[in-house]
Image: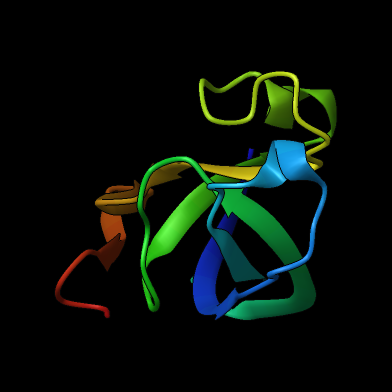
Length: 99
């Protein structure tokens, strides 16, 4: 799993028919402090995430193991919306506060 921030959406009207009905999000990878690491990925959305939210995504064969992406040619999927995280007893992110 990789920690990322939703920075946009991607619309594709022409695509493989098995991908119909999937929403695509543009994700920016972040470090444990919530700062950008420079990497981006487009991922299918399995949890109805939105712009600005912190999420966890899986890639590779793991991306095809959600109900929405099963047996679809998908290489990345958002499978969790992050509510908060902490390290060393200190909160680094809390949804609604750090958004």
